[in-house]
Image (cartoon, rainbow, N blue to C red; front, side, top):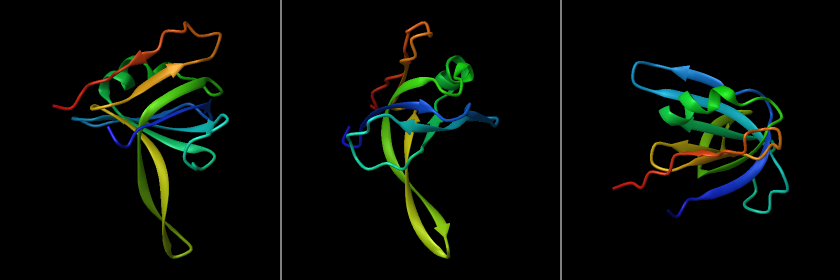
Length: 118
């Protein structure tokens, strides 16, 4: 995978979860910790399009948890003062992604979903 990003950071707020008949999605913001990779906004938006992670994992995340995120970067285009601006966000979807809890009070069991696209 060419477009891969791994960062650690702190969850800014509890994730928001949306459900439709065919899709479960979660959205949250992470404050990068000592980000040495590509320039990311502070906080960085994270979008999770993965039923397994939303059902089994995301519902248990709490504000302030230290996480490791692995996913891909995409640009979301937004209007700022009448000008379209690209805002990078991390996407964890059904094809690739992983979330690990690094907070010492957690069970230290990362739940991941690495599925190789055929």
